[in-house]
Length: 350
Image 1: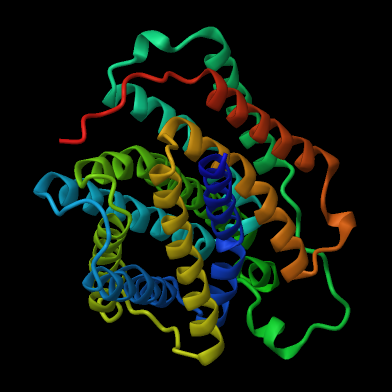
Image 2: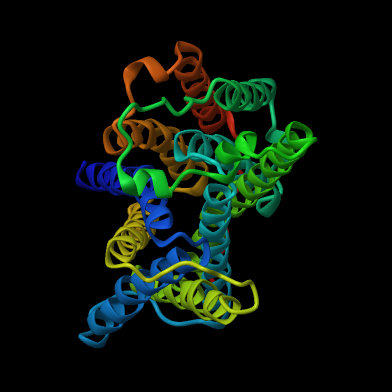
């Protein structure tokens, strides 16, 4: 009973942290006026929470498991998938996407990727039955509904100076007197839409692969909790800190290192690292990728929407009933995928 309650608590920790990750990161990106700088802060938070702290605890001894080349490789791959997923979210927000629909799309598609990859890794495609395919269709339909009926920004009569400075190029384009501006504006909006879509797909596939790969790495290190977390933190540091810092000048980044934006971004990275820890704890309590990850991805969008509405002070009138219905469809599809997804056989821990 205690193990079951521990499993539920670990899943709840991951769902909560990853559910409010998107809105918090969005505030950091807006304050820093950059897509790369928040990513650096996320990587630094991971390094502090997922590398330094576990190393200090590991030095004290008493942690089960052992280092292995296979476990390190799988865990580094899991960390890389997590970092690429975070990059996809940041890029989607940078291209004009809003967390209130970007995150539900990511969390709606990720459990499908998770289940398909689990089936591939365990050679269980023969277990893909009709109910699973029905759940897959529900996830896709719900994701489309979320995208079509996403909340639109409401006009404000008295805009604060900071809000005025954050007006997008799309909003300013119609005021340009150039001939052919409407066509140019439409072209830009179409381009940004596909950029948001591709970035969201990157996050969806990366985070969908995260659970099965991490489970394989943890199993190869004897069920250790801290060692896989350290590998995840190292991968985040390499991908989310060193690479963006090297690209700031070549990509002509014009953002800033404001304290507010850094705190928001560090907070997002801390949430991501704590969510990774929750996933590892859930696996250590007997959870499997085909059960833990879809439950997380089913609950996280609901928490994401509630956090976004609360933090952004979104008026209730801006939230369409069809948008809420789309979220429910995504959650229902994810739950069906969880229930009827292939189970396969547990990977070897050697």
